[in-house]
Figure 1 (cartoon, one colour):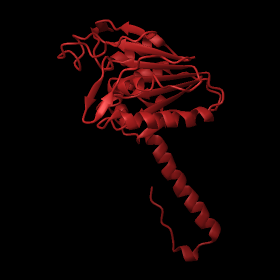
Figure 2: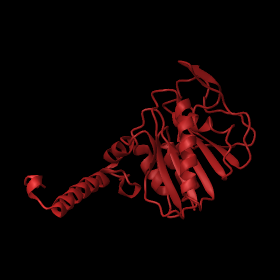
Figure 3: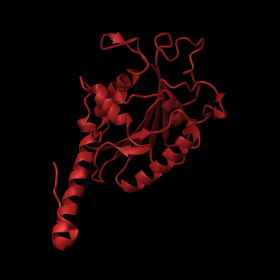
Length: 253
């Protein structure tokens, strides 16, 4: 759509104001159309394009729907290394309900997870204050994102009942790469429940070449589930593991 606007000096002030508002509204509507609102994402034939829209979000904690302030569950998804986004579409649509506020945490997975973990914790504190009816916080991390969310466990201080889920996360032992160190948690604080969802070592393309399964974390009080070898008639591997867990958890009410 093209607008021909005369010289501003010749126009009444109210016309200038109207035109400015109209152009701003059109730009906002176009931005809204491209934003990956959860209900607009396609888990079917258009999954690649929808995944691209999700993974193209800015770094930070991104809402995937509009909230009314009465939501009782805050759901946060944390992607893994080189995520294309599409692996989250079906799981988030399965978990989301009218009672939940769903977010996608975009972070720079090419760098050490530590600063991103601190930023997530800080941003969560701000969002929790905006949602006074919250009764439960659910944080789900996949692959390298599982490392990030697991790093939050031991020093978690929020009083809101919280679940932290690591799906196919290499969290079983300490590691250090390029000055980035990870140490598995040794305890689980009160009001926090920690879940380990582990793929089959020999079927997971991210881990099967490793002699030992990097997912094996021995942590007292954690809830551990080994995923089956197949899901919906297909091999259950690394990316599809999130969908299996979402089916297992069901809608978050």
